[in-house]
Image (cartoon, rainbow, N blue to C red; front, side, top):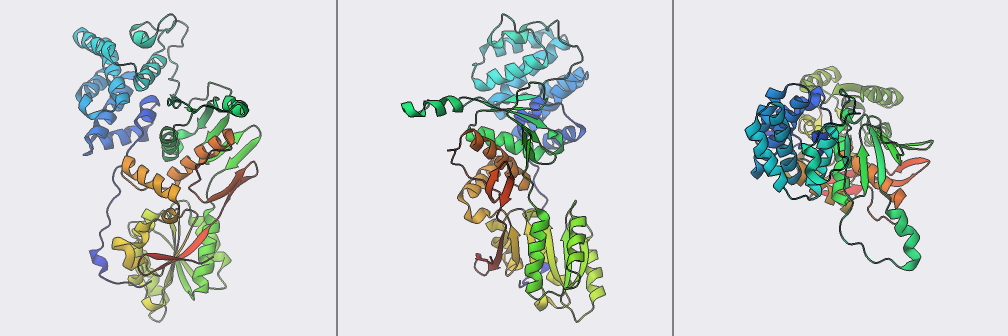
Length: 466
């Protein structure tokens, strides 16, 4: 890797505020971190996102006894021109509910009239269904929007939390005519996937990606976050990224140790003798294991690439190894995390011409080796399971996701997609969409991935190393 230009010219830009799945947060009980996130989005320049976050936060306060505080937030953010269909319907229903609880008769009547005029499309229907379920409205003998103005179900427990069920309606396009021999398969595909999602708050990115994939791919699936429905086809544990069914449990986690070890082999084979391993949160122990395993082949130093003072640590390592040695690197993390560090590396090597750089990253896109980063990543070794640049399906997903969320998808986003693809393929073996995270086989025995290694050449080209 050849370092050109001046390090001081490199700007480290903070990630934009991550967009959010409004329908997910509108139905769940907000945790303290969720509330913080809503407040962050509420203060952002994204007016549509801010209005939706304000409504969701207001609804949270109303449901948790701070009615006046919530009512003001709802009234202040209920602006139809910035809301999508689901949030518009939900916002007016929540405004009616809060007005009734505040005994603001005039506003309640106004909102009731608005609600009665709303078209009962699938988004409005979902908003109504969620609200009536949350408020335990008696739906016996009523239809459509009528339950909003009805009474509470007498048998419902007064303190019971909402049932966090997100229902994704089935695809509404007219299905192609089936041949007689395909009748059995047709009947099978009518079955909706019912998925219990556990520990969703521990990995919201994964859950958002699952919901996003269901919506984008028009899958016939329900994601239940409360776990009270029963009869589930699958149980997804968001915390450990696994899918369970029957006695089986399939782990979808990417093997980061395998990636780092492969990177170490290649960097050492390239002549590196003194290597600084830059790790991210949760991977320090793995980095230490690799350093111990290869201690007879090279000298190792560890540093946290997420530490604000990582440059001070690199300077310390530079002084320790002396003026006659080249310092090489192995970095592990997301593409975004690694790119914030790469431009500084050769500056802290006493002999830059002896520096070898290897990275084990979640995914590799053209951003890593083109544009402003091309001069810093040239000749670097990259090990990844996800090559976005040469996977049409992954590239399409990345483009669509970036447009909708304002950022390149990370590993959790792509794992959420792949977990939904796995469940859909099990329901329909002829399903054509391919995996994003390098999966070449997924069955009861587990997930098998192909970890690829590449060298970045001049002109934005890749050379496969295995």
